[in-house]
Picture 1: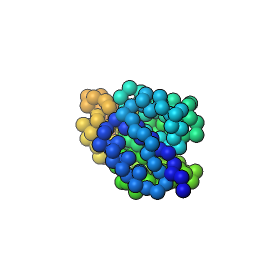
Picture 2 (picture 1 turned 90 degrees about the vertical axis):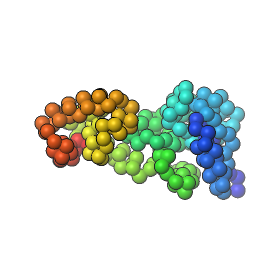
Picture 3 (picture 1 turned 60 degrees about the vertical axis):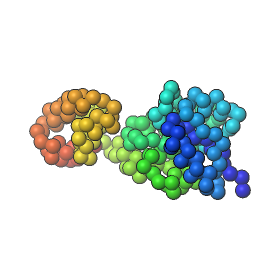
Length: 207
């Protein structure tokens, strides 16, 4: 049986080698090339014509979302899967709009990764369970919420028990900005305790 051709676009060398080893150990896929950047991969897409592209979201130069857009323009049949550490529903939507077929977090083990790739061959659109839950929750959010999208992101992470520092790191914003958003959330929802804000958020479908 012919193996499906796959490329890996990941700037972390250790991860690139690990993914290559895992994927080449399967009986359905063969890694034809690996790249540190999206630009380098895009230059060779026409030559390689891969069946699948495993793409990191954070890359030097153009990011994973832009990389996928360019890959799909050159090679529409190539299925792109985002592999990232970020569990952000907005990034999921941006990735899917760019043409990604799946969105897998780097916390996935080797079997989850292979199963996801096999799922694509069957016409599926693999997504880590936590990501899928976030996407579904996004559709359930109250359209009349008084909160901005960023305040909603902060509120969701507060409800998950994250600290100001953790929220700052996950959303790539300053810790003081997190505190400012939190203050606005409390004011808009007319609560003054963490338990109160979480109860209000869940009761009104704000997250």
